[in-house]
Image (cartoon, rainbow, N blue to C red; front, side, top):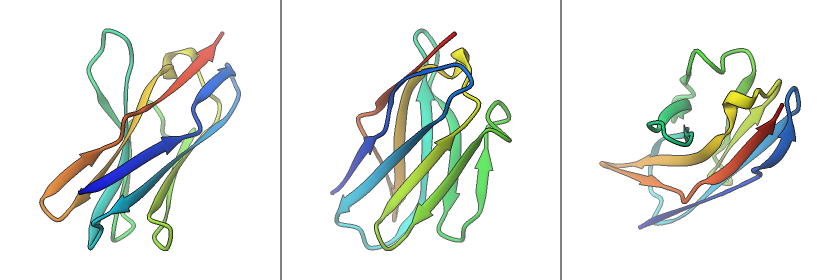
Length: 115
């Protein structure tokens, strides 16, 4: 089993910044990727950003140029630096990780951007 714990969410004004962290622990032998998804009220969960073990990175078009994903393999932690936040970024942000053939999810952290 792998546990993912997100932190760093909160309330911020539009134009502000937040940094989310996701720490993985447990039976980690080979993490293939770690990423961030978000789910706004009444909407489907959507990909925000993902980083692979080979440091390939993908972003959703809506966050390109504003969000930056990075990883610390020694700490099994992935970060999401979010700048120039907009009210439409308000959502619960979930971390996920692919370990061998299984994808694990954290419980999420709420980000609220006020206008």
